[in-house]
Image 1: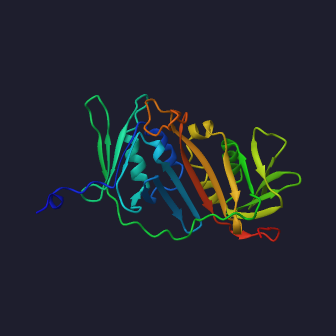
Image 2 (image 1 turned 45 degrees about the vertical axis):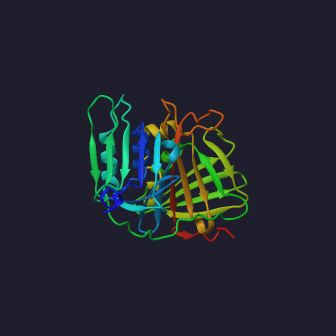
Length: 304
């Protein structure tokens, strides 16, 4: 027998994180219910985790290879596997020790297609976890986001203000009416249920609150409250406090994209992904995107 027939195959991915908490924060942000499955896609560019619900809400967490102090990728194509999001987060949490670097190694696949996690510590102690994976379900809808026109329909607002506004708009079984208008430049969230509540972000009234605004025509769409709330409700308070802003964009057909950034770590050691000039980013960022389908189009909407 040839040596390749008796030697175990090399894993598709072996990577190492020097900080775990930032990744835990990012994944927690898209965990909107207790039992939730996720699809994980691997590539030479990094790891993408996708979760969705009832073909109306989808979230993606991008962990780019620059987040890792080691990233060895040897697969052909882009392997995908399914995993319990709650189990993945809980396992990562066991490696997160306050005041400790909590460096871990992640490997996939193991001998039985497991996701393997192992602590990387000079103290001699070792924590090890195996997470069973499954054949991934097919993503039920296309999350490709198309602009609504030549001019972006978007605004960036402080994450804490966005979360507070959405929390305040809760009415049982309600919809949230989101309106952008260029004159006066403003964003309106209107809750409609057992009563009406309206929250306005005026573009020039508080530039520290509404950081950016791009709109050349009035647009309005309604979104189911529970789906809109999921875009902010599970983001850890430490991320909300530190985050400079969340960007919301309305695409073709009223598709709403909500983007957050989560700081994973400031490198405490020389990082292998340093450009030729010797510079590196002061912090490493995980990107989170939510996609929310509109409940129905308002008569005043204009996305053509």
